[in-house]
Amino acid sequence: MDQLEQVLQEIEKRHSFLVTSHARPDGDAIGSTLALAQILRQMGKKAEVVLRDPVPVIYQPLPFSENIINSSHGGGNYDAAIILECDSIQRTRLQGLEDHFLINIDHHSSAKPYANVNWIDASAVATAELIFRLAQTARVKLSPEIATCLYTAVLTDTGSFCYSPTNSCTFELAKILVEHGADPNQIAQNVYFSSPFSKMRLLGAALSRLERDGAITWMSVTRQDMENFGALDEDCEGLVNYALSIAGVEVAVFFRELAKERVRISIRSKGEINVAEIAEKFGGGGHECAAGFSTEGPMPAATERVLRELRIRLPNLG
Image (cartoon, rainbow, N blue to C red; front, side, top):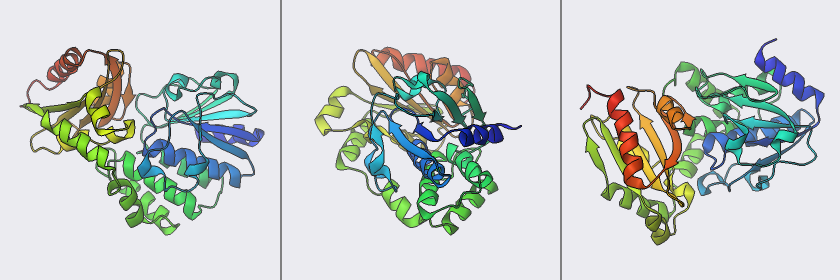
């Protein structure tokens, strides 16, 4: 029995499900959890999406996003919890999940088999691709709402179809989702052309600190920047890509100062190195071309530690 069949077998045995993903949810986390919940309901199950943090503004237009429960507790009267794209229970920042039967679905190279049932496939471009396969195998009809959530997840997690391993199958998946009701234009408008003013001001602050060393470039924002501009956590999403867009740059890093001498780091690569391996070394994870983690500060010390690791891995570039 393959992993997908095992997941479906365990779903069939049960009736009520908590569906969740990592804290500070991105497009794949939100789109995939919403799509899976709708698929479970079509299978005659009860499903609720519970996330530790609120849905970012750009993903709020997604169907049923208003029904997502924001909580720090994952306990409750559920027959099982399905956790998407997390390498541990702790990534969800939900308490009480360990009391449930756990199903783990993940596509990251840093994924770990911590649950009762684990479906891990690093060849998938997004967790949404796995949820699509689940729907197909379960013979669930793709509604326009499910297609919209899955398309949004695939679009964002592939970096607008830029990251490896985007291939012809990825575009075939996008085609199928569009044929089932996903509107590419409207989704792009929501995701890429609906940024709050605070995010643009934060970008300006980050770019003012842009630095480069050969094939590596980096920028940062401080806690003071966040306060000055009234910025939210979600406003930091995607800023690192502006640094990666520079000609000749292979790796870009975004540093964000947190409370209690902590720094959050986002790393992007054009493919020369696997940044997920670097993130794992610091206790994080992600994709080959997009990863993240947090580490001890202060900012100058954290910056030097990360840059040192990058310079070791990119000795001949610059």
